[in-house]
Amino acid sequence: MGKGLHVVIPWILDAPGPVVATSTRPDTLAVTMDARARRGPVAIFDPQRLAGLPGGLRWSPVRGCETPRTALVRARGLAAGAGFGRTVSDSDFWAGQTETALRCLLHAAALDGRRAVDLYRWSLNPALAEDAVTILNRNDDAANGWADALEAAVHSDPRTRDSVWLGVRQSLAALADPDVLGAVDPAPGEEFDPTAFLRDSGTLYLLASAVTSGSCAPLVAAFVEDITETARSLAAHSPGARLDPPLLLALDEIANLTPLPSLPQLMAEGGGSGITTLAVLQSLAQARNRWGEHAADAIWDAATVKLVLGGLAKYRDLDDVARLLGEIDELTETRSRGRAGDRSTSTSVRMVPVMPPSVLRTLPFGTGVLLLRQVRPVVIDLCGWPKRPDADGLRAGQRNIETATAAAAGGALR
Image (spheres, rainbow, N blue to C red):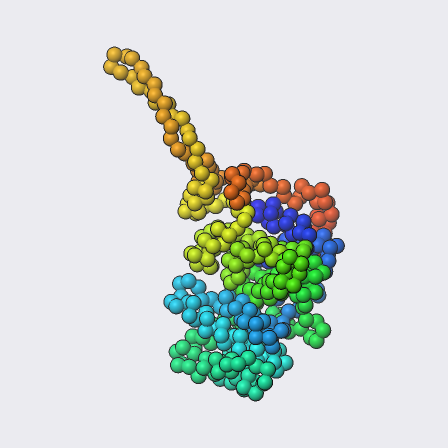
């Protein structure tokens, strides 16, 4: 309860460097956009037109994929949102095959100067992807063996081929929406430059609906992977091998949006490169469903700061947190009375939880339990953004954005 009000928005406002913020609603954007614009450039990737503000960012998934490494990273993000969940038999195999086909298609499109619409066309039918195979075979700059890999996917057993191409279609299904296709097909000179964005301490808002995010999930994952890979590269060439000021990834509702494949690694290693990752989840059960049991445990264990708010209802998660908080000795007094009327009193010691699951579930709004490395657990009072000294200015900016959003929605309805 209150994660945006007390955690996400204050972190974005106070971040000293570049920020990437994901959200399923434009409320975070409305509060923070004006304030962040005073620190650096602001961009909005809103392919589903949730905010409807003019001048939205255009980002091409093809950009830079003439470099095999970039194509590999981009394909990994796209394949992660293809829908091969943990309930699908051999999901890792099918996701890997989908990723292989996607990286080859991305590489071919970049080498031949193709656009996002060509990617979408290739994804509709493996027979149409023969065009991409030809590009890879004829281009001297194509990565060795990639043409053979794509040709093998196109001409494999029909059942295997159809399953792989189902993943490819799902990864690029959002491109069927003209608004989304326009958002990923920039004109020359309009391409988003992640390097300039990071160096200028920009703020990037990624918006996608939680209800229909299944189609845009691969694009969101690929975009975040593009930013983080660029950040790692810049950090490697910076003093101390880290970004200064650091990059904040404010991943609100990230499990609802997309199972970002690099999240476990970002939580474990990103801090050393100057990448601060704030992963906001409804529950650990949600993380287990999206990333799997072991990856969810890795995300939880690698988090330097764990902040638990009230409202959780999963007993397993509540019990796990209660165990982490530890136990204390409680004196228990027992009184007895004999037949002769004499009385006796005895005292014993028993171990009880510091905070039982029922108390964790009913934490008051604005209160959280903080777990920080080896420090003892602390119950803290959180300060929501309306109580900040600059709250009046933030409200004024919020009203301006909400008015613009309402006007855009009205125009779209007409």
